[in-house]
Image (cartoon, one colour):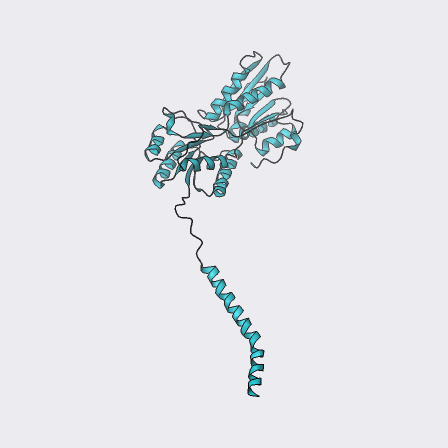
Length: 337
């Protein structure tokens, strides 16, 4: 009789015991899951460290370029040390020297101007750190001080702008052009000017009646165009070296009572969303693309350099020209910058 009662008691308590066991095991697993350390990286694996000296944040293009580089580093598993030089070469010198002290694997440099880099890049070489140029080139005695360049073909951008103008002004006996150029001494300013002039040089119809530096800044673009309109009454074309200056110049043109894109042909370079929007509205006639989306290319080349591999001397992204002649101009997708 007592054995029967004990058996019944066991049957009654067994589900509770099983439930308690499940709870205990679950709690133990949860404690293990929370406390356990993340898995260690494979032995010998090295995370590439890249120091990136960005020249500034003077335009939407530059901001988009910085964001793309930072995002690309995260995608690639690269440790990125980012420094914004605020348009001062001295700040870039300081950044490069701090990268050297930190013993990064690769230095990526978007130089504000072409001159003055010999000493600091020699210091990087002595530290055994390769340098990759981004977006802009440099003028240096020993070109082996940098491993390669990744960025747009600025000379071709100037030529593309000129080819559009030749087509747009076909039949006009004389074409008066004003130019708002980029930062004096910078690669894009020099090469966009050269490519434009080289292409138009053989045609006596074209006259660049005024050229001024706007430092790639919207405020200076507006100021420069206001001054130009005060000096010259016969202006057929504005050739501007970037969208930021162009947007400022268009403000000045409209304030003067003129219609951009009709009274003055507007040619710009970059391809920011604001410029594409004005192209669709007819206020800009041509936008030559200069993509800021260089991050993946920079990270790929940096990782190859960190492994001791050779890279191409020059790497250009694929770019296009948007103009009023395009049938699909209204269907240009969002630019992302």
